Amino acid sequence: MKITFCCTDAKPEPWLQGLSAALPGADISVWQPGAPQADYAVVWAPPQQFMDEQPALKALFNIGAGVDALLKLRLPPQARVVRLDDAGMAVQMAEYVCHAVIRHFREFNGYEADMAAGRWGYRKPRLRSDFPIGVMGLGVLGERVAKALAQFDFPVNGWSRSPKAIEGVRAFSGTEQFNDFLAASRVLVNLLPLTPDTTDVINKDTLARLQPGAYVINVARGAHLVEEDLLAAIASGHVAGATLDVFRTEPLPKGHAFWNHPQITITPHTSARTLREESIAQIARKIGALQRGEAIAGVVDPVRGY
Ligand code: NDP
Ligand code: OXD
Image 1 (cartoon, rainbow, N blue to C red):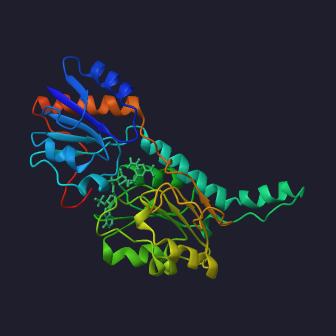
Image 2: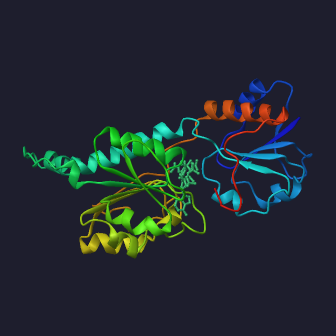
Image 3: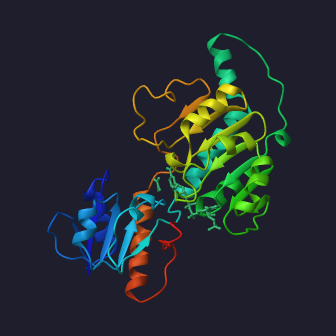
């Protein structure tokens, strides 16, 4: 069995060592143009040339949860696309989003400004019932985030394509319930996959439908958010601020309005990192299952786009 590794931004040596230890007997190497045909590939943002030269691949293991970049390529005809299924990302996403929500709700920005000014000042406690949170996307990551927020007794709404029943979460589904979901929410958390249906989903119209004093947390993909609409909604006072981990252009260009905006907190696409050991163990388990002809979780539907 041959495995090829083609991951932009990942040092290959530790992956190759880990994969070799987990799959003894497999022939594993870093892809180069003209490399022999492989059975399986471990990839992140590979070039089109890679796909064109590997028509015999049975499965492509993406070392991330989002497969939007991969699905833009022409893929080998028989290859299944397999996403990382949690692999340690869900807990990271839950801690990131809970931190962002609580930081805003408990006004830590204000206390930090007070501290810098040498001021000892209490703020009036705010009511959780005034901060209903809407989580868009209730998949592997969104469900974990929604449940974690519910643990802090925030009212939590969730929105997905198909109906869900998650304890502590008021579930909305489909385009027909989208506006009701937005109207019921003040804090909007985005955990949707990027597909043609979800591109630009956070725009002027959706922001206007959120409750006044809204707050936006985008941890999915930059192209979900129309950036100038967010800036305008903050300028109008309808949106109080945002925590953004992902951007239309990454790294965020120098001079971009988000860099120094007092109501926007940014992080460099780091809310849930790929953890190498967990990912290798999951990929090795799945390759073993495919070799035995068994079904695996996390196979992407290329038509649906996630
Ligand atoms: P999943 O595929 O497990 O879940 C996607 C969810 O979105 C599902 O609940 C799905 O509904 C819902 N959904 C999809 N399309 C629509 C639609 N048109 N309308 C309503 N709901 C929709 O994804 P994950 O939870 O694993 O990950 C979500 C995204 O997070 C990834 O695609 C990736 O872009 C991003 N991500 C970002 C990271 C970062 O560091 N910033 C790290 C990891 C992931 P249904 O359940 O009905 O199918
Ligand atoms: C992912 C990501 O999709 O890191 O896993 O963004």
